[in-house]
Length: 83
Image (cartoon, rainbow, N blue to C red; front, side, top):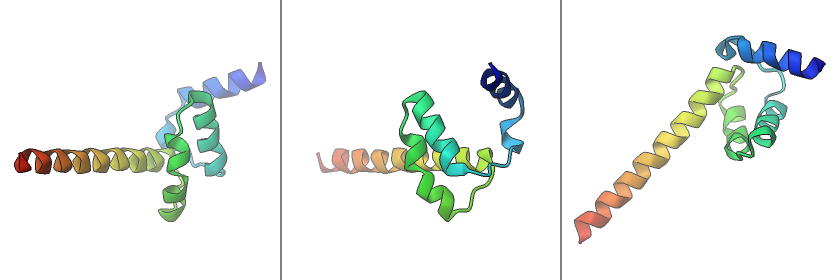
């Protein structure tokens, strides 16, 4: 019961302003709760960039996704050009 109430308070707060003290644990928890391993995949990069806020973690994840999309698009374009 207490965990649910605390979690609701966190959800209702502006996550962009929350400084995360234990980033590894938060990302591992998010991964476990969502069954999405992308949270775990960015842990090393989060440490390299010294991200301390959730907005910084989200930016890292978005940039990684955009870079993968750009690389994929370039690969498809090169394949089309070879045809």
